[in-house]
Image 1 (cartoon, rainbow, N blue to C red):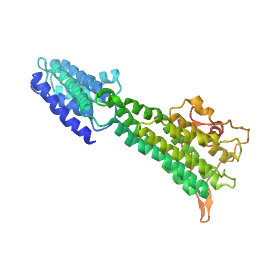
Image 2 (image 1 turned 120 degrees about the horizontal axis):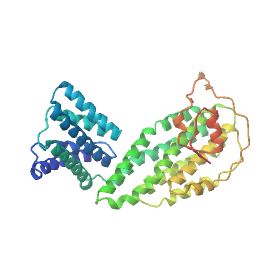
Image 3 (image 1 turned 45 degrees about the horizontal axis):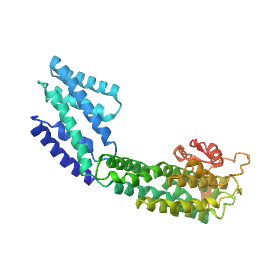
Image 4 (image 1 turned 180 degrees about the horizontal axis):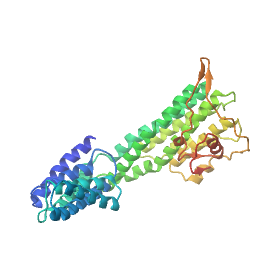
Length: 394
């Protein structure tokens, strides 16, 4: 946030000087305002904000000048001007910024700044100057795009590794409480995923418009390739955690090798994080993931255990995709599962422990499966649990 504040301060001052001293505008307050709106303190879509800002101000000023010069100023005139300016903005684009700027600019014209001569055109120019100065501030006084992406990616990679380790411990100790904790942590990772996406978008934008950081685009492409597969891996981990709760409350066996494989995938996730952070080719991470893939077999363990194995396989594919591997090539690293038709299992209604009945929150959550890469076995379990799986079936 600190770099954005500095960019806003410097850009606003320069925009005022350019509009006032170079262009001769007497009160160019739209210029510094445009800088602040363009840069903001959030992440992402600064180029879009500039376009929406300039178009919104132009609409508001244009509609305001046109109407107020003919109908004058007053309460009903303000209502009419604002309604028309915002309506036109909505017809052109549904973005919130362009609509708000059209309305607020129309209010200023209808109240504080009644139209006179070329004032309307000057205010449009001021908005454009402010937007351009904002982009210049981002380009010449940028935060490091690599550091920004790396900082937010750390949380996303860490969340996936932690969830996989928690599920491994839950299976190893046959403790459904630990699996429940893993499920809750996985569900809570959504904010981390969104923050990483916004940070990556901002980083790519900075590397595009800033000549100082254009050479960093290749290092950001690794994060760009990994973004969606990591999101899918977290979704698959949620499905795995929920099925682990059910399996651990039942009498059926769980594969004794499953905790080890989950821990190795967690380690591979952190290796991939480090490879991308240092701009290295993710060969070490690929080897670690492929080692897990090579040990997968076709042995059957019962419905719940088979679903967990299917989700493990899906996470393997997701992580291979995150290293940049082609989808077909990633899927081919796993042996085919010998899927036999079997009756749908009875619905799971909860669990009990020594303290009496205990209700575990295994309520189907459609976000647990949306966008996930699911195998044929996990697809069937998703149908049983009442969720719609993602579109990628392997």
